[in-house]
Amino acid sequence: MAKFQRHVFICVNERTPEDPRGCCRAKGSEEVAAAFKKKLYERGLKRIVRPNKAGCLDQCANGVTVVVYPDGVWYGRVTPTDVDEIIESHIVGGRPVQRLLIPDEKLTGIEPEH
Amino acid sequence: MAKFQRHVFICVNERTPEDPRGCCRAKGSEEVAAAFKKKLYERGLKRIVRPNKAGCLDQCANGVTVVVYPDGVWYGRVTPTDVDEIIESHIVGGRPVQRLLIPDEKLTGIEPEH
Image 1 (cartoon, one colour):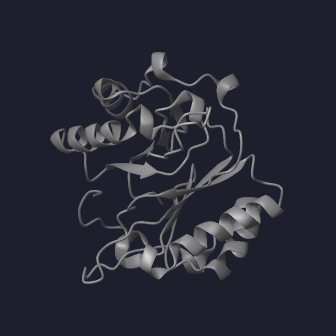
Image 2 (cartoon, each protein chain N blue to C red):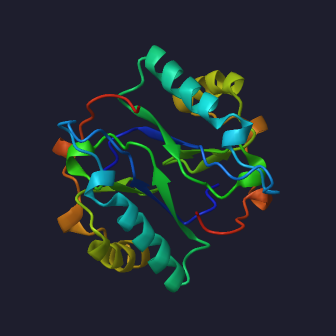
């Protein structure tokens, strides 16, 4: 059984500046991860909802990428200012934030994790 | 919707040698992650089953820790030689590897991710 009610993975992968795919770290993923950690703590959710840094989630062009399990909901272009809404609407309220979802047709990989 | 049929997160967190909790990296997590990547590729599953390195999964004493989503199945003390069985029995066959499961009562956290 899952320990956590929800497990939030934030891509913090870094690529070289000349890589055309870009990377989540260059787009501020460390700040997004820090915002999840801080706000989940403040909301008293840290024991049941875990934020985790992750290696490349294979959605480089859509970064900063966040995936929430067990739901399997993928968010793209997430900024620290979006984190409150993801927590309140999705994590607490059960309603994923539609405006941040990565459309299914864009959920395509390029190559396996490095 | 989830892009991947299964998403396998392997903790590669590193702690200082004197930390009493130990850490997954010191127990060989990089080798476990590499084994997942290699064998999923060999099995032709790399587009639908993604192995991902992750920060601390909060199960330090049970490392190397692996969690498989969306199932929410937690494995502990995983070695590279266990990876074939996890892939064949669980990922392909749908039967989690009982001998490697972290018991629910041991799925307790110590502190949030660093």
